[in-house]
Amino acid sequence: GNSVTQMEGPVTLSEEAFLTINCTYTATGYPSLFWYVQYPGEGLQLLLKATKADDKGSNKGFEATYRKETTSFHLEKGSVQVSDSAVYFCALLEGGSEKLVFGKGTKLTVNP
Amino acid sequence: EAQVTQNPRYLITVTGKKLTVTCSQNMNHEYMSWYRQDPGLGLRQIYYSMNVEVTDKGDVPEGYKVSRKEKRNFPLILESPSPNQTSLYFCASRELGGGLAGAVGELFFGEGSRLTVL
Image (cartoon, rainbow over all chains, first blue to last red; front, side, top):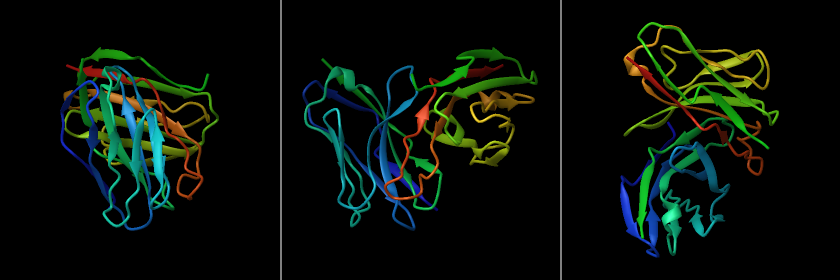
């Protein structure tokens, strides 16, 4: 079946550091890929998405590129801020399906 | 404001005492879903619905019921709660058509309901 694997957390960085959170997926077709973010005490919200190979999703300084050859969708940010502290979820939605499959989440803490 | 509203946000109850967590969305979305979030396990889908009177099991439906009598509401019912249902629960909704490229709707989440079963 479809699945998403994210790097284990937690990840702790200093402010202005470079962030990468790895995400790889398994799917039988051509899924759409997403990153959702969960700030403390809140529900998840969409951060960015990509619907086909080589697409780059971006938002709030975060980026992720849909790499079909490596089945990956790694999340990056060049300079993190304390306000980026949250749990990040990678997810996929396979074509023809309505079910969003989530990774287990990666907790990021950014220290001043 | 577009939102998904869950109630209660926090609840402590005892084993066997029936409870309902309500969920309401104001975006006229066809698709609604319930998830539970547990440490180390991420988000797991409990039930989902693609329209009024249409509900289906997700990955972990045991011990839960849902109903979809109106488009905007999708309550989660625990008929006889047990301690292993202690968790953080999220309701979510979006437009249908998520399986087609270019028609991928954002999933909107409620703020969560933290349930403790003693």
